[in-house]
Image (cartoon, rainbow, N blue to C red; front, side):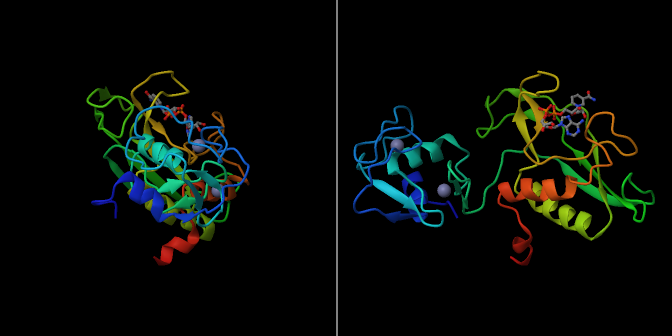
Length: 235
Ligand code: NAD
Ligand code: ZN
Ligand code: ZN
């Protein structure tokens, strides 16, 4: 979708024109919407009029056009935009998960808290590699620790729904990222992105195990924050 589109064109797709700017501050640059953008830095040269203001079509939040373009340029430029105030996603959000494999199967055991059903085991495997332009340190190697990583869901209706949405998240490169591990402190390594997984099967020594009666609802919320909901399954 982004082919041939400049960052300014991508951003403008999601905006409505604002004729009279209100007396509010732009929450990206903290300057008034009545004046020019206060954003200083790379990636703003392409915007024609520094003073123009846009309204995000769905949520209605207002920003300097130049600030939105700068924000877009600082991201992975996938044709999508996320409102920094309310997190509404415009277009299809994708991430920078490195290449790898996602597999799953049903195992004939029950998770603590789900005595009446079997268990879905997901296996993620990502090898180490070289960072791309979408990563923190392009051309530098990244490590990949603790793979294959095994994750568990109850094999019931809600668990299978989570699985379907995780498959979408995987395709959109949103399950893992490259960065600094908060557990180990290692930089330039594969880390979990913002969708929590249960990596412990029969116990809960790490806090990433069962029982956890709120988990399925939480992970559905986290997927929603990445723009992945049940409604998309039809698309
Ligand atoms: P991280 O520590 O930067 O944390 C990112 C997110 O993942 C956080 O939300 C955190 O709560 C969650 N998370 C942390 N540990 C988790 C776990 N064990 N199971 C499920 N979610 C977890 O991300 P990271 O470095 O990718 O995660 C650390 C985990 O990765 C380790 O606990 C381990 O399971 C695995 N790991 C294994 C090795 C190894 O050599 N075996 C090395 C590094 C990491
Ligand atoms: Zn601004
Ligand atoms: Zn908004």
